[in-house]
Length: 99
Image (cartoon, rainbow, N blue to C red):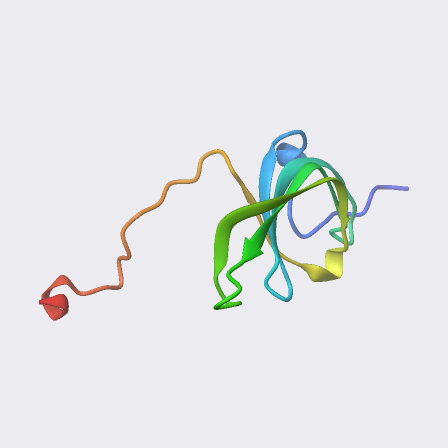
């Protein structure tokens, strides 16, 4: 029987750092060790980014080490590799309107 395909091709990210956003606003980072067709993820060296106590919608640079973590696929909203990311200026801001 052939293995069922996942929506995302995570095979190329195994054993590399990934950033994961979860439903409810939690954000984590770790080394992707495994996954399944339901998008359940196993992260090693997992780190959770903590929220600002004054404004729970903002994530701070403060972290909490978690170690080996299993993330349930129904809670996973975004999976992004840490390597290859580049921050760019917002292309939707009109420079003339800012003046």
